Amino acid sequence: MNHNHVMLSNFPSLLGTLTAIDKNGRDIQQNEYRYSGFVKRDEYRTLIENSTEKLFLSLMLYDEIFINDEDFLKIVSFIGVVNSTKLLERKIIKIIPRFQNPNVIVHRSKNLLLNKTRYEIEPLMYLGGLHDLDRNYKKYSVNESHRSKIVQYFDNALINKDERDDSIFLKNIDIIKNEEHIDFNNLDYKTTFEIMRLYEIVDSLQMQNRHNLSNSIMDDYAKDYLGSKFISISGNINKANEKIELFEKVSENKRIPNFYQMFKKGTVEIDQILDIRESFNSKLFRNWFANPDLSEQDIYYELLKEHGLNLKINLIKWIVPTIIGVLNTPLGIAASLVENFFISKILQGWNPNLFLDDVLGKKLTQLENNFKVQEERKLILERFNGIQRNALCPWQSGKKFKKCHGMN
Image (cartoon, rainbow, N blue to C red; front, side, top):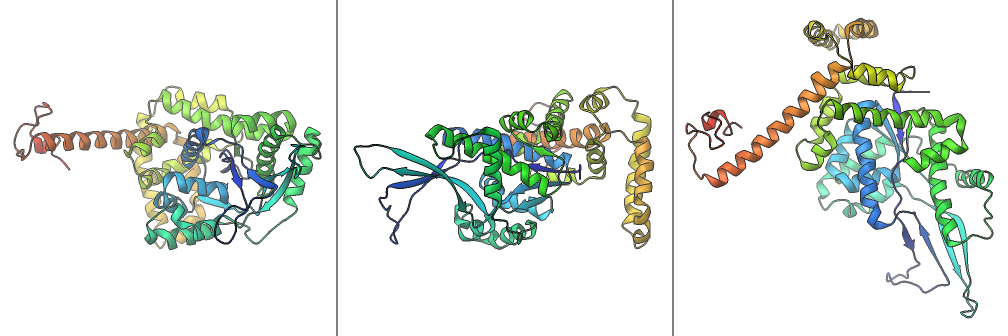
């Protein structure tokens, strides 16, 4: 199994109803209707934001991120077409197509005196995220100039898109029947939501197995359910969730700014986050962090203990660009054959804190400070119209304006 990849399956499914309409778009009154999803609208935004934050954290911790096409469209809706395109452009995201979704059919009695309702779980054909994005692009953006690029990049990111398996729905339902012993011939309203929730969990587990992924990030409910029902595989799922929580905790203890919150405020752009991710020290950090032999206790101790790094930092700062320079020259074709040798030598003197402290922490703090200064500069220019560059800065720093908040 590949430990440098992760599958994100912690995105909520919004509750919605499906009704039949005529050619004029009017609802057709029938004795049945359908619904899918299980999260109410007032809870959805909080849950989708939590899921998106896990995506951002995963950018620093894993080489590739697997996500199903329906969930990726939720990301597009939340962070926008332009930012989503940049994720796809860097080839970080691998999109898994879904071809069927569960939905509940509500059969109402034709005899109004009986007032009896019957519920049934059936598969609903899903035409796919690519089809949805292309046909319903205006739902995601009014700017048509970005349409062709995100549609093409979405298509490029799809994996196994031609390997359709219509038996997946029945396989997932059989697993739920075996584990829960639910009478599917006598369902009530509450039980249908339980089944829809369990279906999401089982389906994500099956996706993980099909793509040979050892890491999966799920919400607490899914994690606890798999821990109680599928003990043999729950360890890897728990480990992925615990590692990402550990990274959050260590970052907080080291007072490293939360780059997702910075992104939300506009303090940092997604390109800047991705540039940090693709730095050499970041790649070394991901390899170290993904090591399955490292326990959470090992990681926590290594990242928070005191290190005598000062003597090594300058040497490693010189070695890394030098090696990159060699590998990028025409001789780099031959040199790349011994790249692992160089990396192993660097790692003998490398410490993960070189990334957390010297790259991630310093860069984010710098970006945060720059944003703060630029916001203060706007305020000064609004209050002091026509301030001279050689005048003292109104922020009372004692410096000239051009040397303080007048710097671009």
